[in-house]
Amino acid sequence: MTMTITALRQILVDCAGGDEIAELNGDISTVDFEQLGYDSLALIETASRIQRDFGVMIPEEQLIDVKTPQELIDIVNNQLRGAA
Image (cartoon, rainbow, N blue to C red; front, side, top):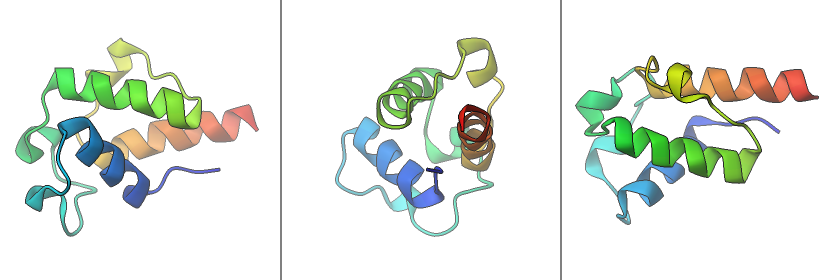
């Protein structure tokens, strides 16, 4: 199992409480979460959902350094590879 940008996009939309968020269309992998409108609280909720869906726990101190969706995907996939 690996996390994809599509899976993360769905988690981000779900955590924002919307059906679709225009800013999340297209290639968002290198766009800062701040530009996408996600603050630290939204990222904590996203990390909680990732833990539930993927079984990967992202420490809060690591989460605060994450700037883009791709960085978050890399952290999750690295942990998933290590668990395999």
